[in-house]
Image 1 (cartoon, one colour):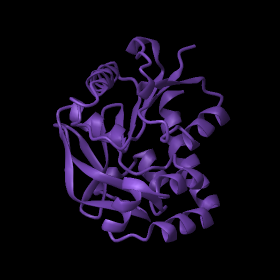
Image 2 (tube, rainbow, N blue to C red):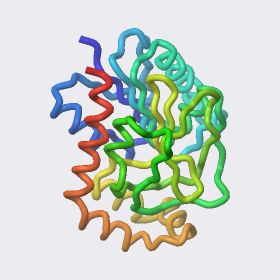
Image 3 (cartoon, rainbow, N blue to C red):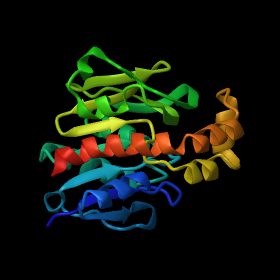
Length: 231
């Protein structure tokens, strides 16, 4: 049986709740550690693809040449009508690969809040799973929609979910656990980014951890909706 392939771009951005959902649904999956130089498979050998987050930008191809290969892979999978899910950096890579543009936003967004469905989101299972549910929105980049894309959700002046055929991009992080978020915001650039965006990182981590049951429920709903497109 062909597996679902998870593209991991950084050591501290794992599949987490997405992996839990795949296990619960009995779906075979494998992680390609692009950050460690692992090779991409033949697109025809995969059942679905999820591209995860990372601190780099989709435009940082000179520093991270693997991003070029990742974009080509996402394009090929979409052309083959394989279900593709791009999360945060993965969303920006997907938008860029399909003819949109990813770029640095005027200001970062770091918060725990719902996205806002657009009128075109009616009947979209992933948006039905997200609607009214708080999710981590943690990014300093944004994107212009590819030609032919349907914008499914916005929030804070950002595009937040889009679809092109079997490919869906979501900047928020339903896969992130409280432990992962805490590690991101403990120090360094991510903590500084949160503070500069007007968010108290310690308060955000505390609120997210206190809502762990809600967070797990949201992740399960979102990833079940995506898995339903695969199996």
